[in-house]
Image (cartoon, rainbow, N blue to C red; front, side, top):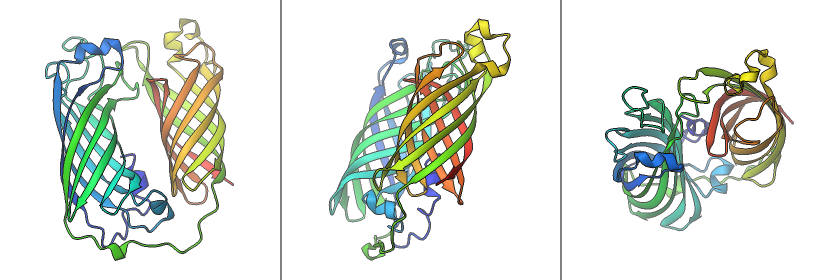
Length: 354
């Protein structure tokens, strides 16, 4: 879903000689309660199984070489969660990328990043499942982070890693503590055809100039806060920033944010009779981004300069992706949070210029 925006920028096009690999990965782990209240959901160790299809990039773009020829694909994970009564099971369908840190002739070590859609069989219910305090919706976001070692044996590839899979709805519907599945995973994949090393391209054209741009992004979201069934309200944000490329793979940024959030009146009764414009917050942020051609994966760290009432914390974070199309358009999908507590999703579009 999310990483597919990166894959659509030519990664999947004209990959002659780079065959798909199909494989299976087995995991064994447990729910990791990042809050003391979540221990009620931990009932033992749980296996998980993952089917995946994967392909190496072609080398047609400069960032392919900057990241040591990464791989991309799609994975479908099923975990029992070791709690059939309150959780049932968790499923995640995730586009992913494997970014090598080091690469040898027949081996590589790096990190696998996946971000897509997840499903939890049993969500919170105020009558039948009150002890499911982690997830209030069946449909969620699914995220995977897995440091992984890979070895190539002809058409076969074997992998081993330690990772975490996370299910969360971004406070779209409470409760939303999130579910974390920590596991050890081993797997094997088989290439459907022999790779053709001669097909990997060596680029000779000149690189684009380092990223230097201004941007303004408007976004929309929905969240719930306070307690379950307190109501879902709209959120609007407007962000402006300046970005500076510091290397071929990364950039720094600084900017300002406006947030207008209806749930502020829910948790602060003194604001209940105020006009919606009175529920506006102002903050400033600094950021860092990994660059993937026209796309980027970014992290912002911000602080509220003004808020009509105290929020969950005086500081906020934002993680997400942005993708550039045409000369000026900028598409945004991000998650704003206060430390480990999700605040709301942001889906938006912006305008950029040099």
